[in-house]
Length: 216
Image (tube, rainbow, N blue to C red):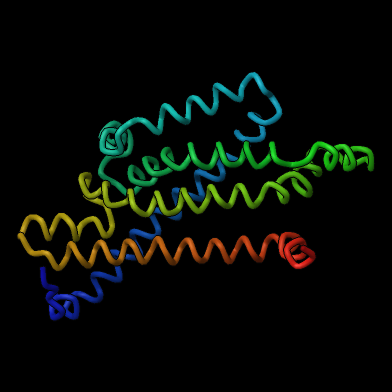
């Protein structure tokens, strides 16, 4: 299976546009997933009787085939980027919600008690103590959700979107492997680069972890 390098050279602008479109859809979905999952995770962490309900609901949504999700959304949002983003956001929730709950659970009780003893209000304790200490677990979920969203964007090709997934459709329809290979490579590169950037972001946001490792 050979690659037609002249085709790549002739379609550089198109490849750049598709790559940026692919990345935009994935990152928008992860950001929306975070905005939704963070408050839900706090509720699930603090109101134990709702924990199973929220996590169970996210698991149920995750079991719906991705194509089916996009099809079900078509009457609501049509053949638009909105349909793609909503569908991807649904899939990120199960990872982001569970990891955020587990991250909050991992915060030592004595740390929260110390903050309470100092007169820190619950909201401030959440923002300045619990979430920062839960950040490594939350970021692990963000990394998984980001890579997953990047891989799933291509499925939206079936509704006229899909970013780099359009290269797969074009290659299969014309029995021309170059667009397929290029699409796979660019998708993998996007996932690798995004994951590396998130690892770097976590490193910057958690200086106390670095100090602990240096002290060890």
